[in-house]
Image 1: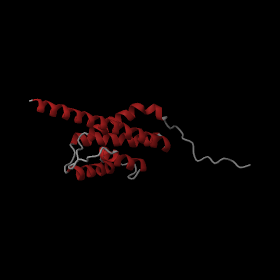
Image 2 (image 1 turned 90 degrees about the horizontal axis):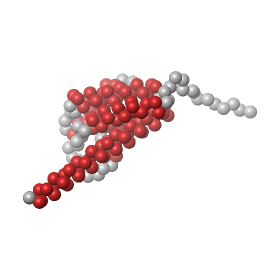
Image 3 (image 1 turned 90 degrees about the vertical axis):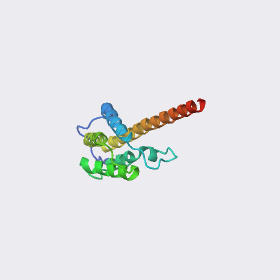
Image 4 (image 1 turned 135 degrees about the horizontal axis):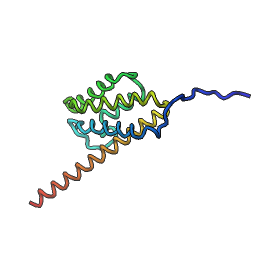
Length: 153
């Protein structure tokens, strides 16, 4: 009879459920960073890719561990995309929030199994997307109200 192959056991790894507050904090920081991201030529669509901008690309790079555990290349990668799409660099405050979020993601990647880390990235990705869509919807609604008030005058 054959023995089952065990690829590896996660030793001293945290459970995904234990990291809810860290995930929400990362979501909040990435969302605050994204508030400064307004493309030069705004897209007419609300596709996930256009809404997430450089953060969507960042999360896929962190998941693939393209730059290892070094924060600076991830931040530089994201800032470069931001600059190319908007024509300006993000503020120092926005870069600070981005740096903190990347550092936390890299720390969590060491504490979770690869499978759980992929799930965490997915949760953060869609959490940030939801917050950004809600923000866009609120701005559209405010613009409609403003336009209706101008027409009444």
